[in-house]
Amino acid sequence: MDIFKNDDQVATIIAHELSHVVMEHSSEILSLACLLDLLILPSMISLHAYVPRFLVALLMQWVVNVVVSLTVKFPERRKAESESDMVGLYLAARACFDVREACSFYQMLSETEGLRDLE
Image (cartoon, rainbow, N blue to C red; front, side, top):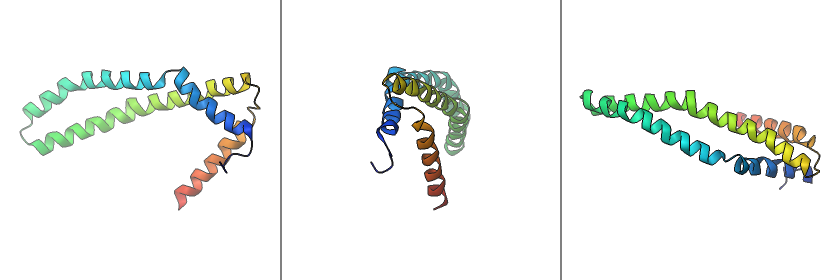
């Protein structure tokens, strides 16, 4: 665990991940996926029924999936991450860890990710 400078930073990450469990984000994501599948299924069935070429229908289905991901799934995941950040900091603070260390850790993580993108 070379990336952590102290126990407070470790506690911040553990609390963040724990907050995903407390907030039941995995259940929310599965429920949303099921709902989206039910809403999209009729259009996909009609698409494959009325578009004579299989590859065209498949391409249109891919486009629909990309649009749904960009407009619904990704924003929902970002919202879940923001919630986990806030609840995780609360949990870490309640456990008497210094949550100010989260700022320096996330800054270092952001810089590391930026360097990784350049490579």
